[in-house]
Image (cartoon, rainbow, N blue to C red):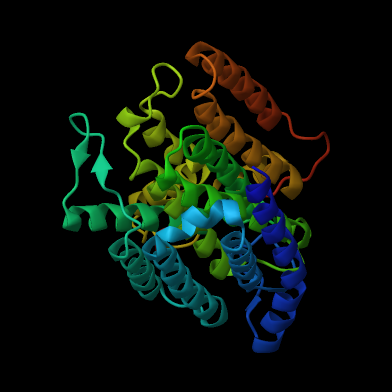
Length: 371
């Protein structure tokens, strides 16, 4: 555990220290977020915070490679290479998009390329829970992996609409993944989960190190450079744990529910996925492109109820924590205890959402019409 915590702290420290530099570079090269009708921020803000996040990930992995107890993680250099190539492609795509505002098809092609390269190099699903355990053939394995990566990247990208929101949600989700994958790799001895444990720990650190600069009022945004990067890394953690470890082989009786490896990715991405599905539904129903921006996301609706930016972020982060850690807790406590705890938490969250601070200003959502 100490080694993983060291890598987490290194990622946090490196990201925190590199973010001011990334801000200077973004200003120098004109990677700025101008204020648009659908935006919540009120002044032009530098992007490219993802550069610092990428640096934090690299520092964490480099330190891990020099720790004796983590040597076995780097025996499978193919998966390390897969993660590095996928991250580099997404980084380049994000930098270009934050600077020149690429169109949706170009971004999609770049995302598919990153996901495909990662899948072809070994970070891929090898089974699905169909009729027990269905072993996937190579082609189907790549297709499923690319789909999952695309959903994760765009879900995180779409939810990145308030100061600190994406980093908070992904940080909490990565912490849940770390808890579960650490249990698999250390307590159960499944070495396939060890790399996911390291990546999830580094992801927690990266988000924690970036948040002080990105919290309301943000001095820098992660931009698509950061949101697509952490979405890719979160998907990679999911694939390395969910798609490569047979749940039937690690169930351990009643200790680890067989369905948990399938439930966990959806629980971690519950908020971004819900926001993504609602956005696609309302846009296509009104005859617009599912990629067309609007101001009707979940965080916009919380602002419309009278919650401030910080409070809205805390609400959505707490919702993520309840779902994600509720799923993880089924590995350690009886199911009924988890159900009761999640239900009580959901009631408390509902009360919190329905009762914004008295006298707080409300932000009217921007209603989009068909053009």
